[in-house]
Amino acid sequence: MERQVSVSFHFLKIYMNASVSPPRCHPNELSDQAKFNQFIERYLAHGFGDAMHFPGRLKESTDVDTNDRQFVAKVQFARKHMLWHYHIGIPCYDSVSLGNRGDWLSAYVLNFQRFSDHKIKLVDLNSHPPFELPRDNHLEGEIAIPGGNTRHLKVVK
Image (cartoon, rainbow, N blue to C red; front, side, top):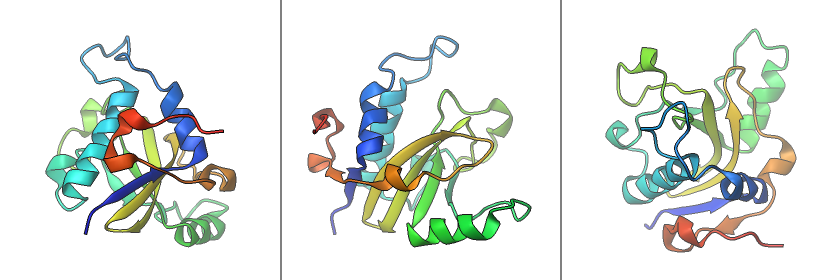
């Protein structure tokens, strides 16, 4: 079965406004937009089965701190919307966490809905910590990426 990637209206805005140049403080890194493209391309080619393709930590977003005052509500929201997050390496991966590939941490996480092993929808990008779930309106809309080609993402009114 072919894998599918789509984006919410909110994520499309994030993508279109993402930097196309490497961060000044980390000139050897890929641009933010290139990191989004790499994530999409690797998912389409390999799925999530092999950590070699995804160096960042990939987790279900139901893994909320039990001391969080909104623990139950956050877990219920994450389950209802099938939310996951991935440490995408923006602006770079934390050098302290460069132990096991597949478990690297970064200051930003990519939030997405994982409907199945073959379909995901990118919905938000958040700084971390603290861990925040996307808002309801960040999940709205769905724009398919034709053939997984991120160069065809366009703003749709």
